[in-house]
Amino acid sequence: MNRWLRLMRFDRPIGIWLLLWPTAWALIVAGQGRPSVANLLIFAAGVVVMRAAGCVINDYADRDIDPHVERTRQRPLAAGEISPHQALWLFVGLLGLALLLVLQTNALTVKLALVGAGLAALYPFCKRYTHLPQVVLGAAFGWAVPMAFAAETGQVPAIAWLLFAINLLWTVIYDTEYAMSDREDDLLIGVKSTAILFGEHDRRVLAAMQLGMLALLVWFGLSQWQAAPLDAWPWWLAVLITVVLFVLQQRKIAGRERQACFQAFLDNNRVGATLALGLLLSFWLR
Image (tube, rainbow, N blue to C red):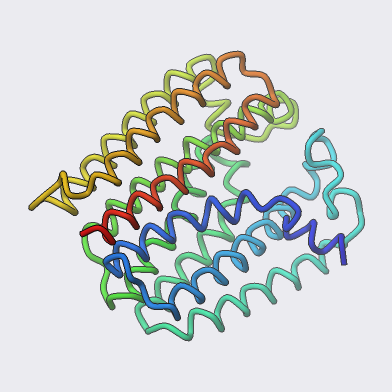
């Protein structure tokens, strides 16, 4: 059983959190701070299932690459503990479970879920053909945002796409930090990433993206609480804390050391949690 849990990466829950936070943002906004309990449970379970499915198909796609990467050579598929055929059947089973969950919502959410499943399946293969797989991952992770709005309100308003854009940019930021920790191995085996694309300019490009994300967060706050923006002071405090967290990430990746870059990636869990709490408190206080 342990090998199956490791294949679905339940021993490393950071991916669940990074997918859960933007989903929570969307549900909080769509539900005006009080989303339905049913949708909370459906989407929380969906995050766990789809993240597991994404890990399985990722390891299937990388089964000939992972044995050559220090950090991944002990994964169950790379180590031969699970066969590619078994992994594919697990992936199909997880998609079936995700379908059962989304069928508890509405027709629009189901249609959007089909697009999300396609993005999740496409991402692992992108690193062979483009230096922008992180953008595809951002679209896959962010697709929970329009789905959450569709489930909660029956439509996908403009504010949902603004949240989607925020999450896409954030995903590229933290997955580039993740890729920086693997850059040497990726260069040796020919895998592409934004970390390789940005090269020696990686920190400057990440800083520009972090500033871009902060600008979008301000835009979101002004759009959401345009009548009385100062009433949403927990949101502005959350944005300010995010500035500090981004500065700390820049300090960690300054030396481009493998473990420090990976720690900067992990620290994004605090970014997601901070923004979720700021949103929730802003709606509750109002």
